[in-house]
Length: 110
Image 1 (cartoon, one colour):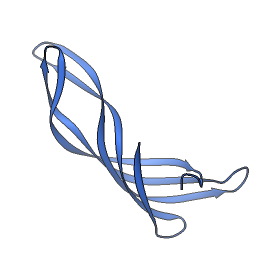
Image 2 (spheres, rainbow, N blue to C red; image 1 turned 135 degrees about the vertical axis):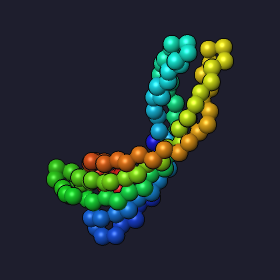
Image 3 (cartoon, rainbow, N blue to C red; image 1 turned 120 degrees about the horizontal axis):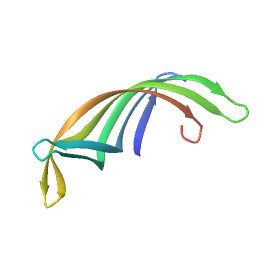
């Protein structure tokens, strides 16, 4: 979930930037106690990229086929600590992830 701003260079080429809240699963492992698990967390992220509106159709309803190349910057934990069975994630770091997005877009979302 997020908000973004789109700047159109032409009718078919655009730049976008936004902020999102990403739902992710973080896998962890404690080698000393020989335990591991998964932890679900919502992390803040930003994204920016350039996209191309490949095809536009008007029938049976207006829809566009869009391809974008993005860079996402996520704020994720680097370490964790356990106290009485409760996991706490610490040492947040920024991680950059490339993305290739293929999407269908309607005028309502444009």
